Length: 232
Image (cartoon, rainbow, N blue to C red; front, top):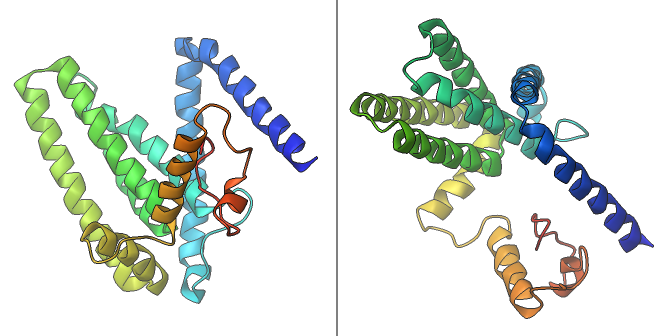
């Protein structure tokens, strides 16, 4: 019965996504979606600011319905990915580029404050991919130079903001140090995520087409754990 309910839930998600594909081909709807995500990110940034003034000092992670750290962080990442091209592309009016830059700094700061390592890495990778796409399609020296300068500036701002937040909040220091240690090779896992990833991929190789059943990774791995990946 439980698997049936999960199956229905995921079927609804899949059908909803498929229905969105033709809608997203409409430029008017894409514009509406753009402003909806930007507005949502702004509202969530106020929520994160309130969190930074209280619960974070108690060592409580941002959590709860509508304010889970990964959920909020991914919204911030999406908004940054949508705003970044406005900053880079040269034929957009200067005032829009300045406003977008200021908004991006605020959202970037809010993103790190959530403490979501997943969303932070996703946002960084998304910006790099978008930059490569813009350079490839516009392909002139001016765009290349401006993109490199903006990415460099973003890197320094990100490093400063992250360092300042880690020094201010013990929770964020602990959180992001796990990621930094992993990147530097001082540890081989982050909260068991690499174990989940490797085990999940082994499950895919074992039964690539029909799988083991929805959320069966909890039992295959012998622990009450989720792979944090819907397909796996």
